Image 1: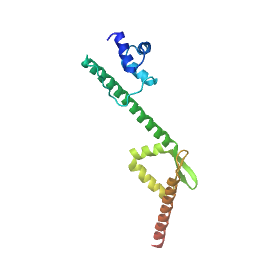
Image 2 (image 1 turned 120 degrees about the vertical axis):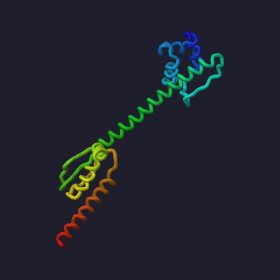
Image 3 (image 1 turned 180 degrees about the vertical axis):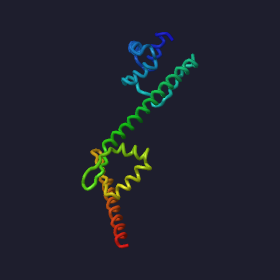
Length: 182
């Protein structure tokens, strides 16, 4: 398609004047799709609400259809990249939040170890057969677990952790009493 026809087509599709259409096409290396996307990004034309648009031009239907298909495919590819980027940013945000939540392992009012929640999650995912029994055994050796975070309210978690610690201590006392009486 020659440059004059490209300018005319962009001018008609975007409802802009000839000079502006020519300038935008020149900026975008005479690519009509890039030009339309550029006009959408700068807010000169409104983005379509759906990924497909129709034309009433019937002179060269196959050629028009292939242009529409390439525009739709390109737009879908861009949306896929944007959705992947959104997912990636969300995952990174959750990892950052988990890095800012600290699990403190305490014994006799002394902090033995501080571990970010991300590490605990990874340990539970990959070595749960070791991690879970160690946590349970640790409770019997008077280890307490305290959660601290700046952004998240962890009062309920700490309350539950304290109740578990108290229950384990009571269980230990009962077991000691049984052995001493028996």
